[in-house]
Image: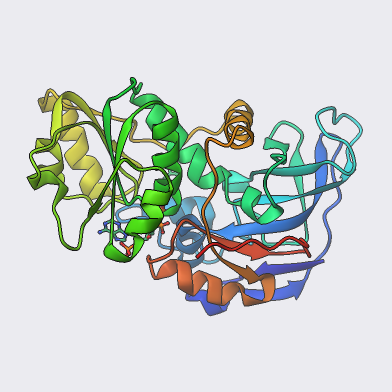
Length: 333
Ligand SMILES: NC(=O)c1ccc[n+]([C@@H]2O[C@H](COP(=O)([O-])OP(=O)(O)OC[C@H]3O[C@@H](n4cnc5c(N)ncnc54)[C@H](OP(=O)(O)O)[C@@H]3O)[C@@H](O)[C@H]2O)c1
């Protein structure tokens, strides 16, 4: 089968499309013919071998010190079940599926084997394969953090980085939870964030959300760039600061805030993915409540270009890799 592989850490050109052995499913696994995958920041960190700020060593311990242990990146996918192991009960051959591979990676390949109980579900009826591949990483992350804030109807929620992968999902999920949502993004992305349903959009190029006399029940920094002291001041007493990004300096500040302030801090942890959460998201999608935002689609052969684009930090929502023909390309600009 074809796969994008890398054998050393480095710039996007370490990724090369090659022929590798097609995997065979174990008794508890499904073999999926991958239609689409995505490029996320996590894939870029894994490829660089750096991890987030302050986590380089820990990251290398997991991914391999001198060279990557898992040569195929990609954490989320959509595709069709091609074969099932003897003990598999949740899926049958021909099922269209989408899901999250997590630390197992491996989605940049024509085929992947995943255990029956992994974070995998049948495709939402109203999404293309490209759109479905873009759901798990951003939406599971947004759901995990927003649930921790126990949002009540009409609470004020500010999403910082509202135009990114996690941010686009967070705006929509917070709206579904009944919040009044403010999104923070740059000038060129204001229309896009409004189209996601944000009640108010703050253009960080021309305005400072923390100087507008508004306080929030929840501030969700999805990309780790919110101004710390000003954000804390913009939180109501008892309000919660959610921080999706790993980054040691900010995590230490948040830990200190947790100990010393009457503001709360959300989980400083890796997202726990559960099948039930993916099914919950599929239900929201099928009800028309949320929809993944797709920026650009690249064929697998252009994987290096896709990584360059994501690494720029300027993408909107999600960047898709077409692995096998999907017959259904949808790109929003
Ligand atoms: N805790 C966990 O387990 C977990 C799981 C998944 C993900 N994460 C973390 O979540 C983060 C995900 O980020 P992502 O994938 O959503 O990012 P992304 O999609 O790469 O973010 C890109 C967006 O951020 C915007 N942006 C850049 N600078 C900005 C600023 N100063 N203010 C506001 N917006 C800005 C960019 O638009 P402009 O440049 O035009 O502003 C662009 O639209 C990663 O850091 C990852 O580590 C954590």
